Image 1 (spheres, rainbow, N blue to C red):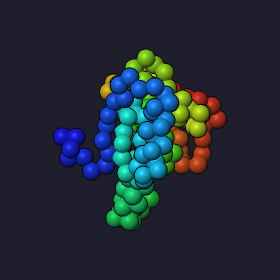
Image 2 (image 1 turned 45 degrees about the horizontal axis):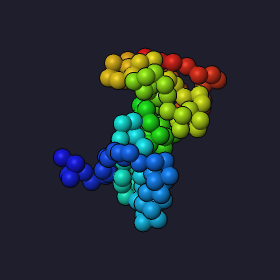
Image 3 (image 1 turned 45 degrees about the vertical axis):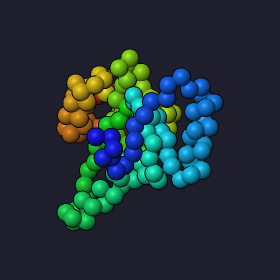
Image 4 (image 1 turned 120 degrees about the horizontal axis):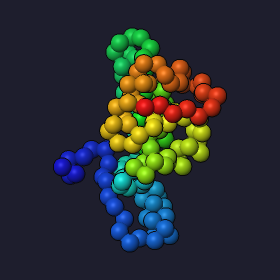
Length: 149
């Protein structure tokens, strides 16, 4: 299955020091690749990310339907940041231990935060976002942190 991927390859660093991880990331970047930390895995990919893919998808639907669309995205890791920054209603999912990705909270301190991790939290947060209990536009941030789900 992993060999059929066209967007990236997940992997795990085993017993690698932070210095070796930085060196690997630097070497990959120098050769035109991206290495990003996800929720459970690292991801090795070409010059693309979730934000770029989502931007293309949003553009496609806007052209195909000829109308503005409203967008929602849920993510839990630093590799979701660009995707979350693009949508009307971004939702940050907690890690299994209840913490939130610092890479996202530092860039988007007022992002909506789901109350539960995993599929249960994802489902509840998505339903609430669909009902309209979230950000109303891509540039308008809520005045304080809110939890949903």
